[in-house]
Image (cartoon, rainbow, N blue to C red; front, side):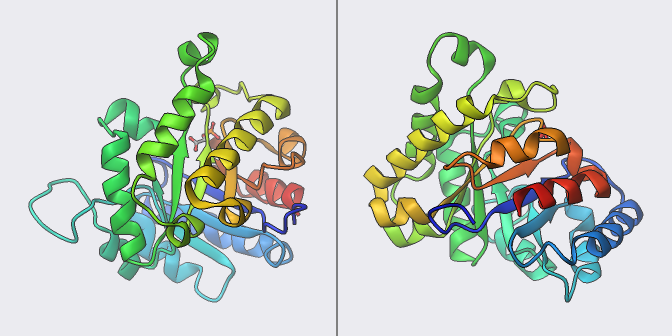
Length: 256
Ligand code: PGA
């Protein structure tokens, strides 16, 4: 637990990796490894859509939750290639990742569309993990806090304190994702503290103190403890290292 009593939350973002067979094998291995860790740390994995239901079934009775990697704002309709929040919920998801930088970069996701997807997630009882983060050019131009604030304000526009209190934010500097180049713990802490201050402005101090803010971007077993040791870093959104059970389990142990 962090000083404010926030339970650390580690989520594995599998992106477009793992067939059904591979996904089920990975979570079986993981479930065996994390049985002792689960109590103190909240854990989730986000498989590709095709593997959500089999993974949820394989994880039934364990403390590992399942997350979608995105959801549409409508419950159903003519939106080829999209999946809705009620569909994720029924398939066994407890969480959904929204606004990941790869969605923003390659699939035209904007703060406005994130905001609409977020509404659908909450309306369907999914815990959203809202991703924000600056590009390298934005950081080098000294615009990190401005960009992240705009993303948080835009994504969370129109939500009340109770709704904000049910969200998880993931700060993921784009330049650190999949690059092996992680933010220093000081860089992470600076942005996390700024996000928490902004949440306090938007939703009040009590709510801001409750919201978990994950760090994401090349989190590995050997840097997790240092990052997670920061006062406003309440967990991690892990990409590459979540695809190997032993690495993911080591990150969970670092969070304990
Ligand atoms: P990475 O990805 O850990 O592979 O950098 C993190 C993410 O994109 O969520």
